[in-house]
Amino acid sequence: MISSPIVFITILGFFAALALLIAKKEYTALKYIPPIVLLYIIVMFLSSIQVFEKNEAITELYSTLKSNMLPAMLFLMLLPNKVSSLAKLGPKMIIAFFTASLSLFVAFILSFLLFSLNTADIEIFAPLAGSWMGGTANMLAVSSAIDASENAIGITMLIDSVDYALWVMILLMLVPFATLFNTYTKAKNSIEDVDLESQCALHFSYRSYGWLIFSALCVSLLSQVCGIFLSEYLFGSATTWTVILATFAGISFSFSPLARIRGVQGSANVMLYLLIALIASRANISFDLALVSYLFIGICILFLHALLMLLFAKLFKLDLFSVSVASLANIGGIASAPILSAAYSQSLVGVGVLMATLGYVIGTFGALALAAVLKVLV
Image (cartoon, rainbow, N blue to C red):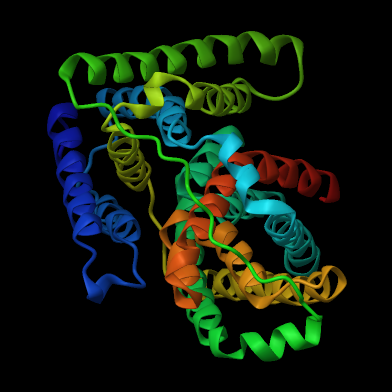
């Protein structure tokens, strides 16, 4: 049993680095199994067989790293994404994206009413909504904001991985039926290519990279301090305000030279994978009937989302490309939306990138709003 904090974090760092390397190589065998999920499963297994001792020193290290890295990671994740670039999508794609987000929001509420009405399940529904309206970073932000347990996060990741893979396959299979779908919805205007704004990265230097990390740590510290202050005088917890402030800081500084420093996305991914490994080190999930039922609920959410999107497509005369990419930009994020865009045309990859970027921006807020609604319904 590992009792040393240094050995503990070294092992987690090793597995996080290995998962990042696998993600970078893009192995075909792992096309539908994200390396980040494999990382969670491996570390969770080590935790389940009690490889890591949960002593005071390790617990303190866990809490310190998690609380400080989360806002820094959110800041860095949002830094390369200019909100002003989203205007290039045009009204049709913006409508498609927000109808997808709205349909997911409603689908989560309906599924909660049908299958749950359990306060504990909010710790699963809200982070899953964060992932399916944004991405894994949003999921971690929401789970921290509502103080979800490590086991709840583990169940969320498994639902996200399994049901997401099914959804990607379905949307790719629908590509040949675009003409038939467009005839049904009476879609008229075709989607044009989006010329992504060139934002050339600055040449790498240790000085500029040092400023980047220093800025992220400053944002982390300030957002936590301000979060504590705001939670005493306004609604919400200190963690909720920390997440919100770090998100706004990332959006605001995306217009600064910091966003052009080489290594922004890589640093954000390192923090993301290490956070996942930390959370997994405290999880212990049993694969039973209850877990299967959660996978079924996830499928039901996607089914209701599909029905509502079909209704919105008919109402707003949206074509299959707009509907599908908007859906996957929410549920799959930056990793899969461009792939689906390319399945229609290589020239449309930019549309998928920008729509997934929009998901990063609104995912946390949409999921926190959902958590508030679900708490009222209980």
